Image (cartoon, rainbow, N blue to C red; front, side, top):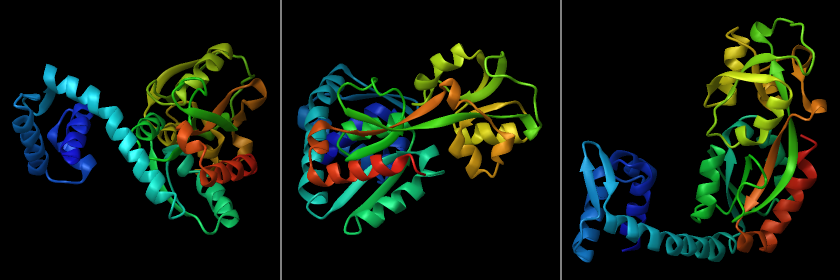
Length: 284
C-alpha cells in the first residue's frame, strides 16, 4: 500500500505516467497497476486522464494532501534508522556546485570523515529542497535565499562570488554600477531569488535567461552576450581569472546553504558533517 500511495504522490507532481515511471524507476504499466489498486481499495476515481497528462480528482487531491506528511515521516525514519546507523549520508547538491568546486570540498571532508559513506544526487536547488522535505535526502548543499524555507534548518556556509564573463572573452569598458545587459539564470532557480535585488542595485539587466549557469557561461564564451555566473562555473570552464569581471566587492554573491530538516540536523553524524563543510567551504 505504501508503494501505491508514493506512486500517487509522485504522479501528482509529474503529471504523466511516463515521468512518474522514470522517477520511480519502474515501468509505466506498473504505475498504472498501482493507481488502479488504490482506486479499487478506496472505491473512488483518483485521477483523470487528459491525453498524456493526468490530473487528480477531488478525492485524489485530498488523499495526497493527507498521506504526503506521513510518507515523508516514514522516509525520514528509514533514513535515520538505516543510513545513520550504517554511517551513511545521502545528500542532494546543486548541479552547478557538484559540477564545479563541490567535489573538491567533499574530497577534503571525506579525508576528515573516512568512515562515512557519502551518496550524492545532483539536482536543481528547488528539487533538492523538495526531496529533503519528502524524506528522500538527509540534507542538501544548495543555493538560494537563506530565509526562503522556514520549515527547514538552513545555514549559509559560503558566499560564492558572482562574475561577469564578457562576450567572446573580449575586454569591455565597464565599471561596476554601469547599466549592462546580461545572460543569467532563469527565475525558477534557487540562485535567482538571492541575486535579483543586487542585480537591480548594480544596474545589471537580465535580457536572456537559461536553465543552467554552465549554459550561460558557454553562451557568453561563444559571444552571444555577457554572462553573469558564479565564479566556480567560469573557472571550471577554463576561463582565465583576468578575463572575468568580479562583483563580490560590490556585494553580488551567491549564498551556498547547508539545509536539513531539524530532526536530521540534530543527529551527531550530520552535525560532524556540517562542521567540516562549514570550516572547509571557503577554502575551495
